[in-house]
Length: 218
Image 1 (cartoon, rainbow, N blue to C red):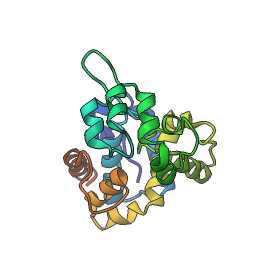
Image 2 (cartoon, one colour):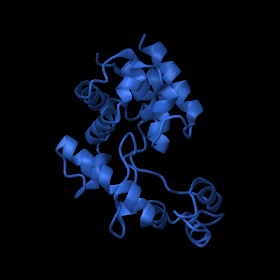
Image 3 (cartoon, rainbow, N blue to C red):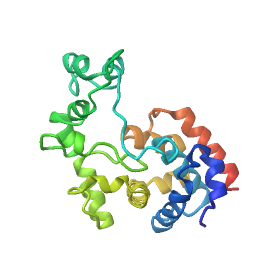
């Protein structure tokens, strides 16, 4: 069942400037990937709403402070020297490209994300409504959607592809079935950490959006 613009804005009120653009893209994406029940749509809209800042941010923000880099990422992904050199401090913004190439590159990036070439961390940073990240994910999504995402990763900054890639990833990782089972926190954990059973970043906001979506879509 397609959602209406009124329903979308009741769930994601901060999306007002872009709701009219995203509504048809979201409905097409949800229909194609069988996100077609109240539970599935509520879970999907809540999770992508959180990941994208309510549909307003289609490219990952890596403007981390030095302290955040050292807290969020392990030392095999960014060392103390690089964190202090690239992280945001008073009077100096973060060097986002260098951060991306550190935390998504190296041995960890090659193993976990398929980032095997210099600059892949930045080139394949998070994009779209679910923040697809890494060369391997871009390649797989490109094959699944018949889009040249490996060659043109910026395509995920377009609303149609941003929504479709999120729904593709959702279905590919079995999240419809988890939504059916009411395992909402596990959905967020898989999106945010790669595994179920953990507390995802922004868990409280994800749950608040989900609860709101369930009421709106009732």
